[in-house]
Length: 388
Image (cartoon, rainbow, N blue to C red; front, side, top):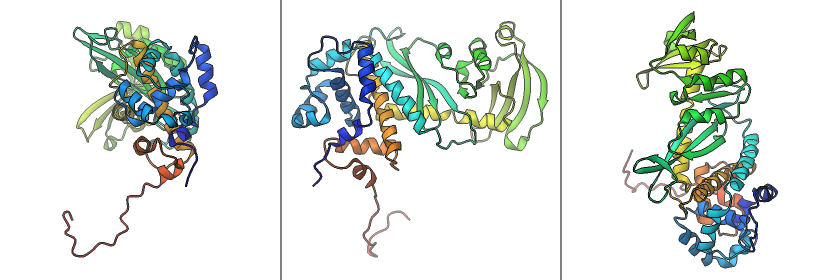
């Protein structure tokens, strides 16, 4: 009989406690705290993410039912709904934001050599934002529309491993273009964006910083063709041009030449026009890079379905950000564990298994590798075949 650590404790072994303590000290998270520390708060909220708890009362009831295992989970205090609610309200959300950023750096190193849809040595990022709807009467600080509240999750996704390299949480009114000024520019990297980010004044620093962007052009783009490059129309590429902007303000904000690639997508029967400051990659590769941008849409869909970031345990801005950043850190922590333990299962499968084995005393690898669904029984001839 296995008498080792709980599955939850084995997952949290990948959490760098020294980094968490540094973040807590940086923002005085445990100031005048006697019992329920920031570590207890994080572990309780991580448990809620891994087991899909619906509310603070739900968290309290489940952990109290397993009170004899709290010490082995690393939680040193009794769980009380009011205490957890107050901690989420008053303790600085930047503690968990910094912790998540540290985990992101660790995860990106682990996934650095992972394959990519295109054979590129450069790092490729996809930038986009998703809106999380909120009730304005319950979240009055989340301004969006007259009768509707919302927050936006701006994410820069590293397409190798689908690890978010940059996350910024804002109210629903902030336009996506504003986040371009906040992005860290990495020389040699590609930034793939939708046309909502088309602002030449904000894109010009990418060229100065040695980075490349691929963005979809708007229909009212004013430019002058300088040179047309030869293309193979059988690939879907209609034209590949070097252009200069001719708009009065656009030319001032981006005075250098751009590359304009026009592509016909046979699958959707749409003609798309892309702008980039890279003149070396084939035109078809530029179009394929934009196609890879869809991964960030899938990432948003995945985290909304598998993490608790659509319903919140508190109404204050701090509580919402605490919950989102802890959810992100749990996602990255599971991705780190998957890579370190060389687990074949997907992140979705791992989270589903953890949700039902979190209090079990069994080897983590045994729980996550014994997932065979094969039927070892021999098929009998008298069994009806419903679908052939």
